[in-house]
Image (cartoon, rainbow, N blue to C red; front, side):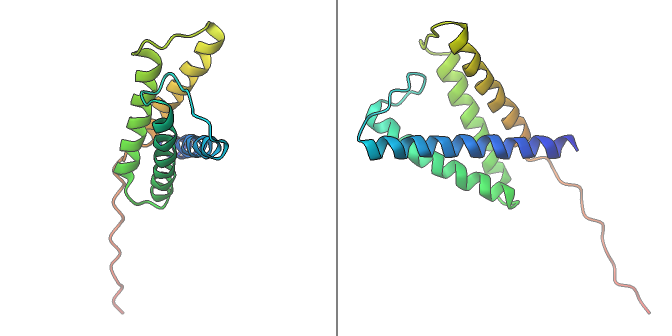
Length: 135
């Protein structure tokens, strides 16, 4: 039961994050403005395309995981999301203006960590062998 809840959370969290990234990139492209997200390692114009293509790849990965296909790829996507967030917020020179800006970053990173745990491709229980009955 816990694995199912974690898997559900992981799909929702990673899917919404991927949709948000792709949507943010689409808005940036439509308005002809450059993004400035200091915690991400890509510069302005390149960041928009990285967010767009990674967001679309994330949505595709989540949909395939929901369908039961390529779950290890979904796990790798979740690990990558957590690594980028953790590195960007806590292992670079990115600074927070105060506790009010630190809390959302911490919550987002912890949410990505829990999503990564939920995306782990746990082995499934083997299906019982059904033998045809002889009459």
